[in-house]
Amino acid sequence: MSCLYYYSLNDGNVEKYKISIDEEKLSKIKEKSIYKCGKKKKVSYEGVRFFKNNMYYTDFKEVDLGWREYKDGPDEKLYRYSFTEYVPTYLSQLIDIIISSSSEKAIRELFQMDLSKEFCGFQKEINDILNKASKISDSDYKNKINALNELKNIYEEKEFNSDREDISIYYKEAFTCFHVELIDKITLEEYNKVINFINGIPFTNDKVCDLILRMKEMF
Image (tube, rainbow, N blue to C red):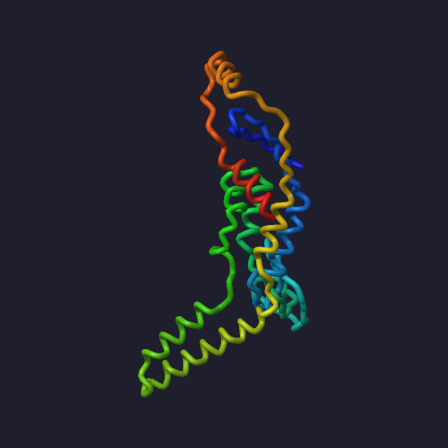
C-alpha cells in the first residue's frame, strides 16, 4: 500500500494528511471495469501462434488446421484462434498510472470522474451512418447498400455489447481505495515561522487533497 502526503489550509491551520492507496484493490477494480464495461468485440484469425500480451479476452478457442508449409524453414502447426476481446477502459489506464507512479494528475482525473473518455455505446456511430446514408441518392445502389450493411454491423455490435455496465460504478468503487487520515496540524502563523526560518517555499493549498476529501464525502 503506497502513501501520499498533502497539506491543506483549513480555518487558520495547516493540516497534514496521509493518503493511503490500496493498490491491490485498485487492480481488481481495473480488471472488473474492463470486463464489465469495456467495449467488446469478436475476433477470429488463422496463425501459427497466439499473441496475448496486454490483451484482455474470454471465450478462447483454438482449432487445429493442420500444417503451414515453408520452403525455407520447418513447417509449423496452423490454428484458427477465436475469442472475445475487451478494450481497456480509461479508468483502467488511470489506475495503471496511479499504481506505477502515484501521479497527481491521474488521481485528479480519477476523482473528477469525467466519463467523456469512456465507451458510451454506439449511438454516435449510428447517427453518423444514418446521416451519411440520407445523403446518398436512391439511384446509387452500391453506396446505399454499403451504408446499410455498415449500419447492420453497428447494430450487431450494439446488441453484442448490450450487457455493458455503467462505468461510474467502478469510479466510485475506486474512491474507496483512497484512505485519508489527518496526521498533524499547526497554525498558519507557526507554519510561516518555520518556512521563513528554513527559507522554504511558501505554502499553497493543495487542490488534489481537497478534491479527494470532497469526493469521498459524496460517495
